[in-house]
Length: 266
Image: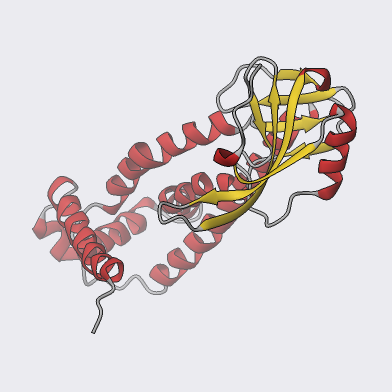
């Protein structure tokens, strides 16, 4: 019987990671003193726990989706700032998913507690926190704040640096803004030296991964790609291919992969 090595590794790694994380949190984010927790752990807090869990789901969903939409809007705004364009190529929408997702996981707890504090006394909230911490074995509020600092903040910074990325294909050329760039670069079609259409890329075992890509080599050695940071498609936009062919006046060279293209002599 064959073994699925990747499945075996995942099956071992996931529980080991969870157990290690729990031990780490219990060591570095301890709960309140045992006597204090024991005195309040059995106190009846009614439906507070269900209400808090439901509120966290609502808060996390709204904040995560709101942040996601805001990132999409900001990225589109950078592209629109280039002026009129026939085609706009924006990064994959998955790029804007991670920061809102992890952010919602880390901050929904604190936001929920803050909203609760507006309608209830702090003593009730402290009793709830003490019982909650006693159950998991660590100070959940401190742990989530540190996770937000160590995970969410770096991811958010990396995501914000990606906001300018786009390509605007206009009547007079292509305007490109790359990751963390302070300004856009414009390439006139007259500077194009080669227009190519490749079908995808090859894995190490030689199999072809389909991901249609339009490439333009310019006179300064820069190679523009229609697939940069975008979703894979089996075929490129035929309208875009025809448009670039007409504007550059170059024939469309076909190849299976980018490596199969001949060396271009400038």
